[in-house]
Amino acid sequence: MRKRIRDIVNNDTTKYGRTFDYTIEFLILVSLIAYAIETLPNNPPALQLILVRIETISVIIFTIEYILRIYIAEKPLKYIF
Image 1 (tube, rainbow, N blue to C red):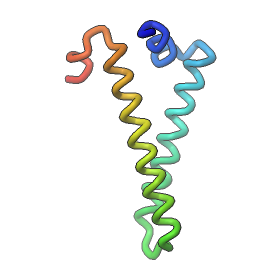
Image 2 (spheres, one colour):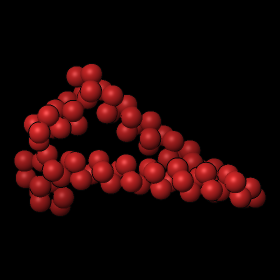
Image 3 (tube, one colour):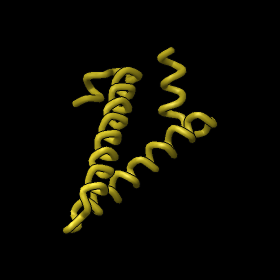
Image 4 (cartoon, rainbow, N blue to C red):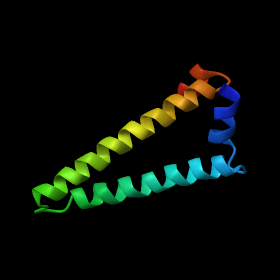
């Protein structure tokens, strides 16, 4: 299981690896755009709610990615620090 996850997360030459990378890159872009819009004055409450949800979902996915990277690391403590 660990080898399979490592192959997806670290190897962007496979179909699943590219999909994983593109997904994370897209999420980074969406997160940055949402953050930029959030700094604008006078955003309506509905937009503020959407931006907070985007931020929350992004943080959850980035946390899962980080935990996966720790899980598949050869030396997890070295990866963390």
